[in-house]
Image (cartoon, rainbow, N blue to C red; front, side):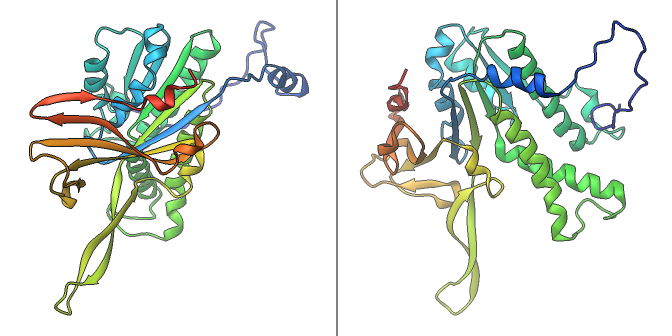
Amino acid sequence: MSGWGATAKTQPKSNSSATAEIVYDKDYYTKQFTTVGHTTINRLALVGHENTAKTGLAASLLQKEIEEGKLVYCIDVDNSARSTLDFIYPNKDNIKVIPLLDEMDDSIFHEDNSINYVALVNKTKFYINIIAQQIEDGEDVAGVIFDGGSTFLKWCEFAMRQSLLAKGIIENEDDSFNQKEWRERNRLNRDVITRVHALPVPKVFFTYHLKAVQQYMDDGTGKKVLMAVGERPDWEKGTMRKFTQQIFLSRYMKKADMAAGVKGDKSLAPNEWVVRGTVEEMKGANMELVGSTHDILRVKDGAFTWYGLDVLKSDE
């Protein structure tokens, strides 16, 4: 049950003349330089609480490519994307959903059946490399959805803790440790996100959750209590620099429910709710949309209406 987390041992190279050695020299990089493409790339972050149509919106923005039969990979961190994609695009064989936390994969579990998060993070890297190899071999990949960026960041934290435990820095996974050790979590996360971002495909979409920003405030009686004062993306600081576009998604009902991440809109009917997307960042085309808010879907009296965000398809 080892494998993914273990360090590979270098084997002696064969003296056979049939073994070709790859040399990364000037000739290699000259070839790389001359094959650099000019395809416009889109790196979009979709950020919101649960049930805010993050995966659905990502899929809808790839509708043209999917209908043309081009391949779309979805790296399903949360194990929740398949149900959405199967509903939107039933019987579409060109949508490949790749679950990472797979109960049938012995390589990601310890002998005591607990999850080996170091192996799980390494497995993610291998899968990204395999997608890159498939593209190099000629697959026509139009887009990649990395679904569950916030969950993956948590995996990196668990992998960091397991690594610290193995090194003897901590005795239990829930022990405290020096602040500088968090650099390992951030390194693991950045390595994967950067590699997904760098895949040679026109569109790569990432989904992230929002989390509450809390601070102690006076509750009106002179007592200090921890209260939510806002929300922010659940990603590592600096992640936003990877994206050319950011859409923040929120669910609205007539009466707000801050604990559930639902905002209030008194113009809505009691039996109506809507998901809206606010453009937080837009590099290149459509910069005039920054700050604008758009209805993505609406449910009223049990009737579902999808609007999507067709304004971002105008360049197709």
